[in-house]
Image (tube, rainbow, N blue to C red; front, side, top):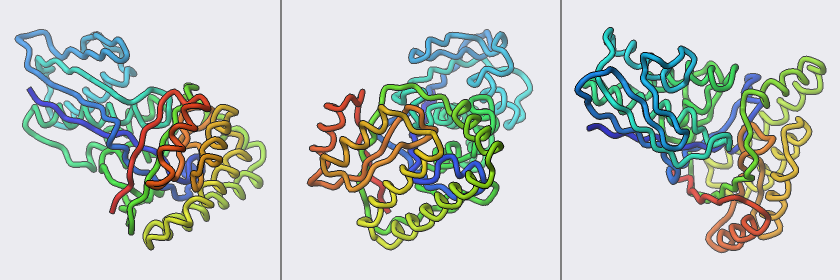
Length: 309
């Protein structure tokens, strides 16, 4: 038996603009994990089971565009294993689907890790990320690559599409609360909707992407220089730009306002928007009050995470 895990992720700054070449900052969320266990079977090829999604299928019968089957086939191809081995994969996930926490990428990375380790050839984070990116296209159409990158490397990153991974320097730890709006949001349609609006008015949207890119650069500098006090206003500024991009949601804005009123230094949506999660910057004194305020305002659940050097 071999077990491997992968964390979720949140985007701190730069969602949507990252698809158009601007930078983004993302961090792993270690408190929410995907665990994949691989065991040998007597015969019958690969079997995939997932209680969270209700999957119970054989690799041989799974369609080519099924994400779980696709990542298994890609991993076997990467390992140059021509014949399907007799294995069972059990997928257990704490990550909600459609909430902006990178659940699809986390499942893929955990499968690559568990399967390659079980078969005796563990793959590097670079290869885990590359294989997962190909499957992300099935989930999202035109993914930025940020989910597979931050999850495979398991560390905060400053991400620029098409450029090498840049580890984010964290000068001092800071705390985040992640509030689930309860509104399921698929990344693909949200990204497509922004693209359609960009195609209709490229001048306006390029200016918005530039504005978000500048916020990201300021945030990366603040994080590197331990200037945590600057992050709150930058989160608020990024949220204002995302509203103008048309990707927010009334439920998200209710949670964001509740967090601010309860003492959060700043708050914004995280991920595709139109539902999913929001994040709030808190400290030891404000964390409990903000969490209570988010739950009272309708958050389905709240995760706490700390970004550390």
